[in-house]
Length: 108
Image (tube, rainbow, N blue to C red; front, side, top):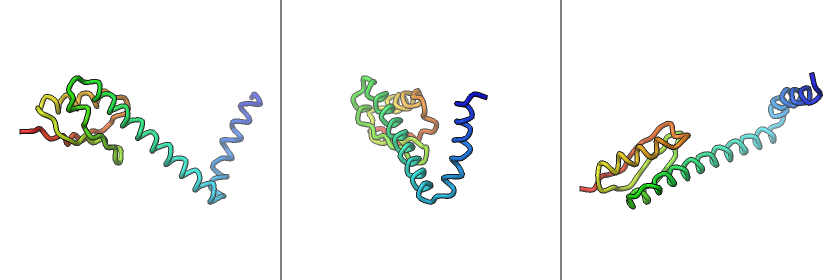
């Protein structure tokens, strides 16, 4: 076993015990995880907004994009049911979107 492999195993083996022993480290690790998750959510929302902005329909540019509990939700109004379907297809094409709730309202 190379020294680098042994060192990596030692760090991996001690890390959980260190976090478990120290409440401060555990809280810091939780804060870091929350921050990473929040950044991932923000990045996903930005990708979805970019996908919608890439469409020629101006109304899709103003669609509300919300991520809550792993569900991506679209809100706002569109002119036609086709535009609502187009928004759904555009969003589902974005990597990382697993669940979508399309709350877009079609104007009558």
